[in-house]
Length: 304
Image (cartoon, rainbow, N blue to C red; front, side, top):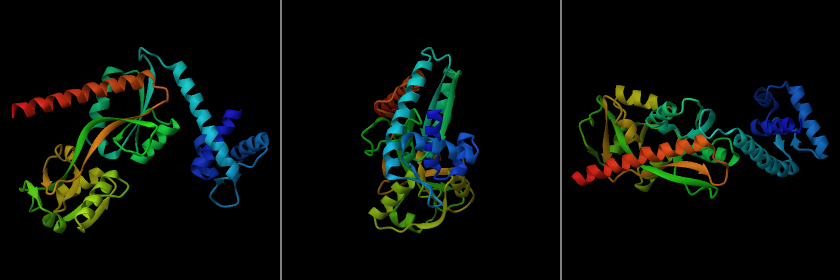
């Protein structure tokens, strides 16, 4: 009973209202409100400020929530540990990944994982880097595929490969046959860019600011597939990870000079949380896949 009340409280704080929280915990709003009251009576304090439309924790509630989240994480890790099956005949794996990876990396990677471990239930979530780090800290996911970041001392970042950005140009653009672009050319080209919800856009904006350029931004979109369709069927150009561009027909990648920024893709994991067998298997697959990529690239370089 106490744990159910605690989960109800966390849901209300997460959604900041009783309506969405009641849907998440599958309770009516009166029943949910009653559970919060029971918890407050047990503790002898008021945990939530209900005086406004947006529900917020009181000062005492904030203190209690900090310890409650840690306690629930420990209980969840204990549950997962005792139900973990080392031979991978069953189990689950929760992975968050940033949106650009969904366009070229996540599909092949998890197809291979499923072929190797068909009895592991996968929970895949497309999230921002900030949300991946938050969910790792709170124990809501096991692993993340994102970028190396200095933000959290509690997260381990295992470098995988360097992701390069390039200018995406379609057949309808007068720039299509070029192999390189200058700052003057990119400044005048009509552009469609990812919205500022994407980490990629932050890198692009910093690049333009560095060279004091104002891009000719015609369209912003929060969908990579939408941007690719626009580039294919119009004179608009974009800036995207080169690996995405190279998988498209009727679009090719142009190098921008000075070079666009690079970033290091990484596997993210909490440093101290329990690592289940499925997470260990996925890490081993990642190690094998990217060791092979690095080896093949070094062989090609030596042959040249």
